[in-house]
Length: 278
Image (tube, rainbow, N blue to C red; front, side, top):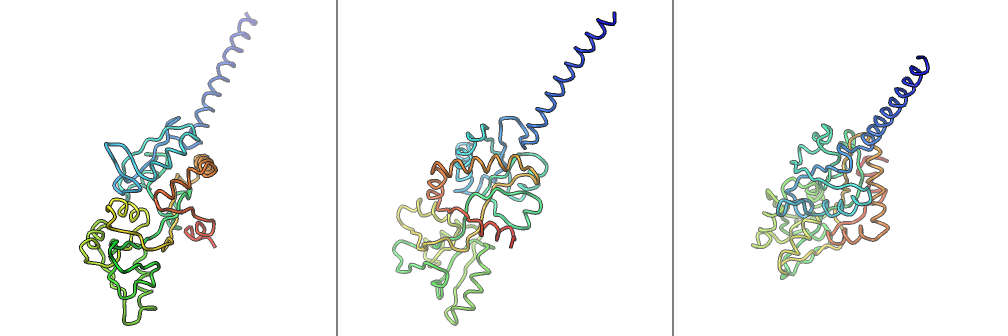
C-alpha cells in the first residue's frame, strides 16, 4: 500500500511540475509584452496620410510599411487598431494594444508615462508651386513671403521669433489653416506663396500634384524625432522591436523606406534632445 501511495505521490509531483512549466511559459509570453501570442497589436490614428490611413479597410502608410518589415523578424503578425490620437496613450496604458505606431512625436513629457523606440526623424519642408519664382530653402528665405501652415504647428512660434529677429520690416506673413490640406489649397489658389508642412505630408502632396508643386527646401527644417510607444517598463517588447529595426537597417530596407517618405534617421543627439536628456 505504501508503495502505491509513493507511486501516486510521484505522479502528482510530476503533474505539478508540468503545470508549473506551463504557467512559467505563460508568464514568459506576457513578459515579452504581447497581449496575444504571435500577434502584435498596434494602436494607430488611421486618418493621417501618408503616415497612417485606411485603404479598402486595410492599414496603409509609413507605420504600416515599416511594421510589415519588422514583424517577420519578430515572428509575429500585426493587427492595427484604429484609435484617435488623443486616446492612443491612455489605450496603451489600459492594455488595449501592445504598442503605438502612429507617427508619435518623442517628447520628454510623454516619456514620463510611456517608453519609446525612436525610428524616424520628421520635420518640416517648404513647398511652392512649380511655376513660382520663389525657391526658399531655409526659414530665413521666407522674409516678406506669405506662408501657409496648419494651425498650431510646432514650428510656428520659432518662425514668428525668426521673423522678428531677422526680417525687420519685411516680416514673414504666417497664415494658419485648420488642416494641412487647406493650407495646400491656399497654395494652389495663390492665397499664399509657400506652404510649410510636415516633410512626409509635403512629399505626398507633391507626388499627388501632377507636377504642380515642388519641395524647395533641401534639408529637414525644425526636425523632430518620432517613435513607437510601448508600455512603461516593457523592455522585452522594446528590445524585440529594436532588434527588428536593426535587421532592416542592415538590409537597406529601412533607408529605402525613409527615402520613399522623405524622412531621415535620427541620431543619438537628436533622440536625447527630444527626450530632454542632456
